[in-house]
Length: 276
Image (cartoon, rainbow, N blue to C red):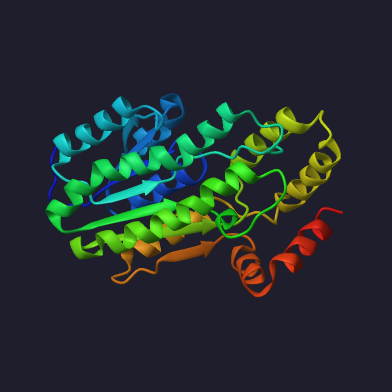
């Protein structure tokens, strides 16, 4: 199956949303693409479109090792890793069980880090590689009930910056993508987790107000489609000198700019104003 004329990309979390859109975009850009996720049954359309499908659980080391070994065996290379797999776990710090908090970090950080470890030797060997880490504007801002999710994304920002410096000498680019509100399953999952954890606790009123803010942000016409992110990923991969990070999607750049110019106290007030 080796094809030395086409660059090879692996996209995790490919069963829906940004991951699925990215697989389709990279196929159209001429890559040999592997779409990986737990829900293989949700990726039959990607297989029909020409993608290679792999079952992958980023919380299981054996699954990740087998995934990378299969790609390298079949293609003898791996040029692009899009670390997209992740989810949002919301709820008050007091309420969220530490087992769930650890799972949030296991999926959003440690699984991503392990896959990165596994691909780096192959990228170093070829003195070429692109690692795309899907962060969030949540990696630059914060909000109540989001401590564990925002914690993972803030961690991902620092992790990616350090990795970029380490791998530059080997011709490997590390690129952070910071989406704003995107129309995917993510919002519903985050809200479900928030209501389950804190909907019937002393934080119930805050859950109600935060849910209303989420609902407003994800209204039709306000949130962006996944293609807004996959197109930016494509742009970053085509660039000879990609930026370290790209903010994209609905209101991503204005929100990050607002956080940059406001003091912590002023941003706190702005957040509470939005939650009225």
